[in-house]
Image (cartoon, rainbow, N blue to C red; front, top):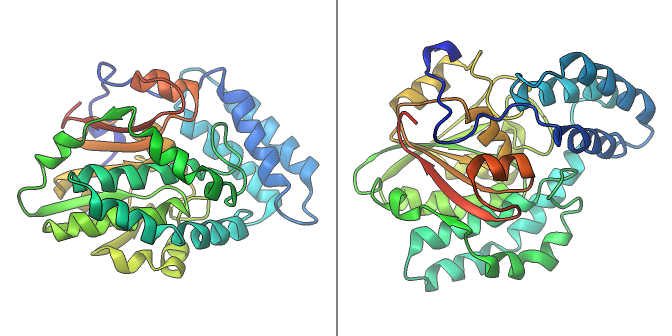
Length: 306
C-alpha cells in the first residue's frame, strides 16, 4: 500500500515537517557519527551532509525524509555502520538492568504501566542526538532518576482496553540498548495472548536496531515474527514498505512505535489501527507536536484513523 492510500490528518498530532531546530540537531549528529570511526574523513562526511541538507531543506518536507538523505551522504564516507560498537555496548549495559526492571514490574500493581515505564526510559539511549546521551555508560547514572520521573503523559489505560482479546501487535523498535528493556514489555504482551511482530530497520542507520542487531542481542527470539523495513530510513518509509510488513500492519490490532524517529515517520499517517507512541520528548518540535513539555517520558495513544 502506498503512502497516498492514507488520509493526511493534522488535528491530533502536528505533522512533523522540517523545523528550524532541526538544523543544529541534525548537524550535531552528523559530526558525532563522523568521529565514531577511527581514521574516517570527518571533514568530507560533514561537507557532503551540509550540501545535501542545503539541497533537501524545505519547510514542507517531512523531517525524517530530509534527515535520511543527510545521513545517507555521511554514511557514504563513514561506511555501513559507524554506530556498531556503541550499539553492542548499549545492549550489554541495558541487559544488566533487566533483572532490576523485572523486579520493578513484579512488584507493581499495574503490570502494563510498569512495563511501559521500563520500556520508555531506554529511549534516552539515542547517541549523538539532542536530548539523548552520547555514551551508554551514562545510563547507569540515570536509571534511577529516569524511573523516578514517571510518565509525563500516560495513556496506558487505553492500551489495557485493547489487550483483552487475542490479536497481533506490530512493535516498531528504535534504538539498541533500549530494545533490551523492550523485551520485558513484549513478554508481558505475549503473556496476555498477543502475537507480537517486531519491526527493525532494513539497513544500519544511527543506533537503531537492525535484523543483525536483533539476532545478536536475542531480540529475535522474543517476538513471534521479525520483519525489517527493507531500506535505509529513519523510521519507516511509507513509499516502499515490504509487502509482508504491510500485511502485518494492515491486519494488526495495534502498533507500538518506540522513539521519535518512528513518531516522525508516522505523524502524517491515519492508519486503521491505534498507534501507541512510547518515547521521550527529546526535542522541542516533537514535544510541541505531541503537546507535552520537553524531556518527558510519554505513552501516547492515537486512536484508529487519527
